Length: 553
Image (cartoon, rainbow, N blue to C red; front, top):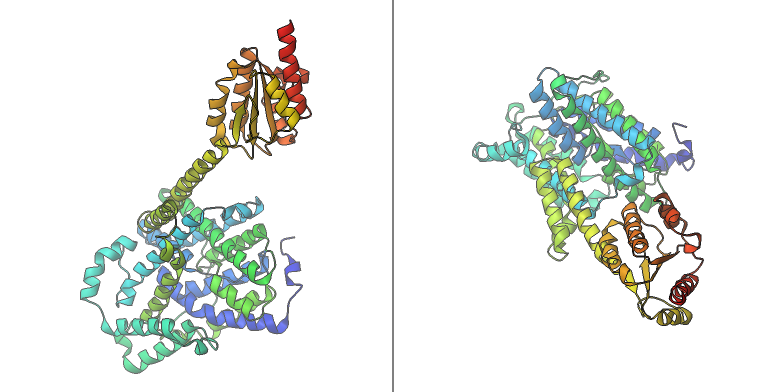
């Protein structure tokens, strides 16, 4: 079934309608701000909010998730649009929206392959780093419009290079409006925030102030937004940049997946329900594909809209559908009311979003936590700002995983033990201790415990190098729930060395996965039929009997 109608079973007319209306009010100023910030125009932000919100609600896998253009997605879309326009001024806009469609198809593919649960499996230091990096990018990109100028070319580096000139030629009228906007967003009393979101209050109040204090020519404004239905942007490709378009689509799609599923987890914690991550990715993919086709910004699950939706009583996706329809009515019937909004106000709203995207909770405590995650976080943040998001995440995940594997290897090395007499570190029964003592140091008990991955292979090799000093080896795998191929090969080498040294081998492996691994490597075929024992005691008894028989012979 393409649509999961079970998500609608708990719908409430009042709660869902009120939730949809409230989130529409929250979304309007953000959609305008993100549309202008991206360079695609305010109408692209509005249509992105409508299309992504509607189709994600219909086809998604969550009951209360609100999807719309977000700060992180807007940052990537800004870079994509700048890159495509530089490559082809005539068809650059169409190619940028094609990238959005590619991102949607990628998300649909991930959903159908059931890879949703793996998307957010990355260290928090990496997530924190790239989210803070995106916040820094959004802040830097808003400096020019905040100071009264169009955004200079060159993205972050271009803006920073042009900053001295921007400061020397700033427009005080627009800077004044931008500062007023930030003042409202940061210092609006809490009792007023209960009646309307601060972004909407800032949008309305500062726009009215700008109309009263300044002439039309003194302040840059949005201007008239087309009130009709959007035109179709058919997929457009140009051979020199096809690979760049595909890579940008994968980056945009991956970020949308991460953004959405992290928000869905937050929604689950508030509603005590569980979302379907794979279906949610399919819904997000459909939504982004349609949005790109009709010239809207890409979107993802939005934390603020989702939390507001839940807090206002919404119980089903009907709230997300209602929100999209309300925004549609605004575009079709009240677009002329949007035209006088100053660009500086939207820059202030986007700047505020960028500041809030920064992971302040981690940044404030970075000096108190371990050095390695702090270095990873700041490294990922720096790479995100000045190099590339995908490079930043890739390098961050690689380094974090290497560090994790190194720590696990040290821990697992302690779980690889080889003894020839009774040892308190290994839980032996009195009978087993007696057998080891009777063997007079001729039996080596090789004991592994816990999950075994490739990092522990060095410890296994270290112990098995002295196998030739013994006449029998007991390999105890009873406490190993799983092992990977590398560990299997390490054990195979240990068994081969024992056979070459005429050392009898006995194995106790009650776990099916470990035994199957040894079977696939052909280890079992190299050993006599009595090599596999039903208990460690039986293995030790056979080892001692084998030594006695050889001595008597």
